[in-house]
Length: 260
Ligand SMILES: Nc1ncnc2c1ncn2[C@@H]1O[C@H](COP(=O)(O)OP(=O)(O)OP(=O)(O)O)[C@@H](O)[C@H]1O
Image 1: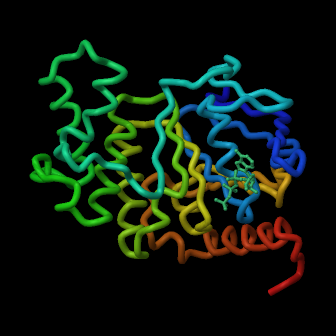
Image 2 (image 1 turned 120 degrees about the vertical axis):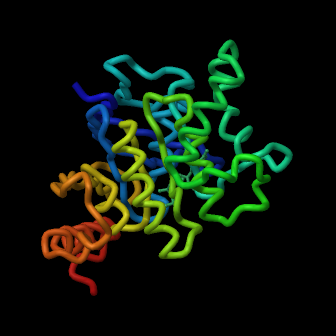
């Protein structure tokens, strides 16, 4: 069974100038422990999709299910990661990572929270930086710390909305490999919203292409590459073919079929 199941979801925002349809027939199935990368034209409704999965809004029609259970209210068991990691400057990196545990598991001991945070920080290469303040770290390091914070409480689902969008190319590729290593050590289920097709192929087990607004599921592309993939795989013919295919899908989604 899929951990996340979205079927026939349609939604329109009420605006002063009338309803704005954003989703029209969205389907998405994400098996437990896998990554779904969602791509689509700007403004097509990708962030709206994340709000639906997190239970922050209920669609006009269609169903959103987690573990087969209808999502009707905000879920504590969904972790979120965004483009600009909002780390609290008055807390150390360690205490920033611990924060979700203080909220969802207030009865656990400080020692066990520290151990959990230290374990994750070591996995992403931040051992030795636990006592630093966020401003003492580079953008890439802050994003690593923010990743740790988003999974420290072992959420059922991690939603990432353009998490690496603000980073330079090399740092971004480093972070992709960090994600791959994190997944190998502690599997989690993830919906990743991205504008970067290479990122979608590198991190996704499937890539879902949304059509232009109002968005429907235009294409589901399984990514059949080994789990221990390295960046080099993106230059291999099978990955290049997928990237071309996705590029074409995005052109269709933008209504520019045949354009180059
Ligand atoms: N609360 C809201 N009320 C009214 N309109 C909204 C609301 N939230 C989003 N919209 C509109 O709905 C459309 C889809 O927004 P959404 O943020 O989901 O798109 P997106 O695909 O994430 O965009 P981008 O790719 O630019 O990040 C946009 O036109 C946006 O202006």
